[in-house]
Amino acid sequence: MRFGVALFPSKQLQDWVNSYRKRYDPHYALIAPHLTLVNAFETTEEEAETLARKLRDAAQQHEPFKIRTSKISSFHPVNNVIYLKVEPDDKITDLHKELNDIIDSTGQTYKFVPHITVGQKLSDDEHFDVYGTLKMQGIEHEEEIDRFHFLYQLDNGQWTVYETFRLGKEAE
Image 1 (cartoon, rainbow, N blue to C red):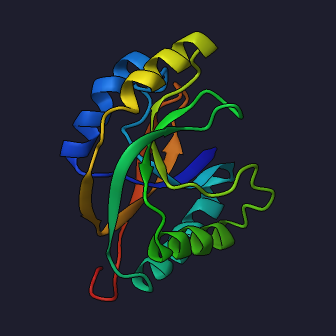
Image 2 (image 1 turned 90 degrees about the horizontal axis):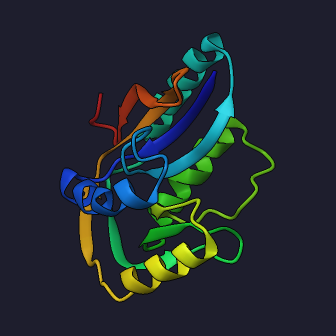
C-alpha cells in the first residue's frame, strides 16, 4: 500500500487553493490541498501500524507552529508545478526531517520546499500563462498548524486519512 504524511491548511486557505486547482491540477479530486511532509512510499498494513505509533510519539515532541504564505512560485524548469509558497521555518523543517527519519525515506529526489500545489502537469504554454497571471497575486496568509495526518492511497487513487496526530505534549 502507498502511504504518505501531510498537513492540511484551514478551510479558508483550501478554498482559495481549490479555486485554481479544480482547473489546473489533475489531482484535484484525489486529495485536498496539503503540504507534503513525507512523500508517498510503499509499506505493508502491519508496518503502517508500527509507523503510526512512532509518528504519534514524534507529534508529542513538536509544538504547534504557524505557517505563512506570501506568494505563488514555480518549480519550472524542473517540472511545471505552480505552488503557494510556505515560508521556510525551523519548526516545519525539523518536523519534516524527523518524520522522514522515522519513515526512513532515503533517496529523496528533491530538497524539501514547503508548499501547497496549485497546478501541475501543465504544458509549457499553460504553465507560463497561468503562472504569469497568478504570480501577480499576493497571498499573504498566516495560520497555526496543530496536527498532521498519516494518509494512505485507495485503489482509485484517492488519498484518505489513516490517522491524525496532534502536535504537543498536551495532545492525545
